[in-house]
Length: 375
Image 1: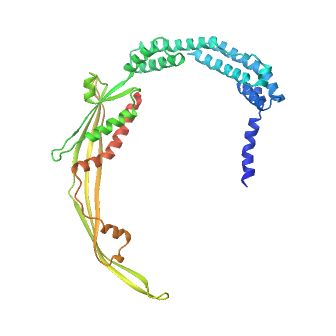
Image 2: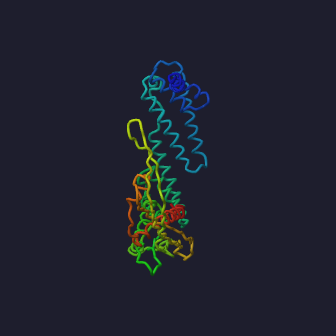
Image 3: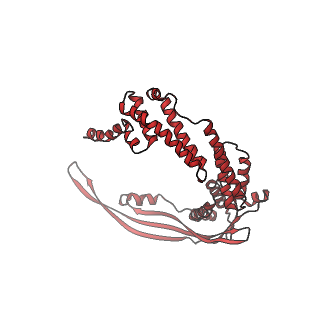
């Protein structure tokens, strides 16, 4: 049943691969027409339709390309040399296809290609972008500096090391980059001895991973900012409030269990036996929680940009049981509980770490969403 189905799937592929490019030529898609015709001639050098498409279509393709170049260069289109380069590259691509196909090369032994003209076009395209970069640098704003950086980068892509693009890119990047200081996290509690260093390090690492140094948002610790004599754009301040560890709450549950089981006496006879037990289950529970207040401050004018409280909770649970009577009366889950024991409560620092996990997730999401606009 599968073979006819696969055959139906393969038929369009075969027809496409055998296309001579005639339909593409009829609708004026010269590049595709030539490409299909040349590909057909690679496998079938005497194919009449492909030879006809190539003979008629290639001169039209070259003529149309030159017309497009002339119209583009006489227009007021921005960065018109980039479109010119695109057209020249497609003409050169057709030339490569023809020169690498003997049947096609017999018809057009010296296909059109752009060499020195293409090099000149690269120079012109690079200069256009360079001048655009200079124009935006004159506007002296962070947004214009970012745009200028993009133009200088494009100029460098057209010609590596064009003029002083590397120096201009460095200046533009410095002007466009947003510098953010992440201050240490304060923990407001007199009752517990807690450290928020682990939380701070996680947040700092996350932000630096999400915003690499080659981008336009950089994060610094207060110490780094001091060493670099940094005048930041923003400061993120974080503070934990209302941290609490509740008292241990122990719940007890006692139940009587009975299980009737058929026990074989002989190969053909059974008796029913009832197993009985008393099970006491203990559940120890401690609920911890607190809130993180974080603020994003525009350092230049001391304006509060974001002020939010993020709550977090964590419930520590330990469950265990004891029983008296027949072990067979217990289910597998009940027996497993009897293997558990009462254990000491976790340290306050461990509970602190646990309840900050959901806070960390929400905080990093919000910080990412806020600063990604500057990337």
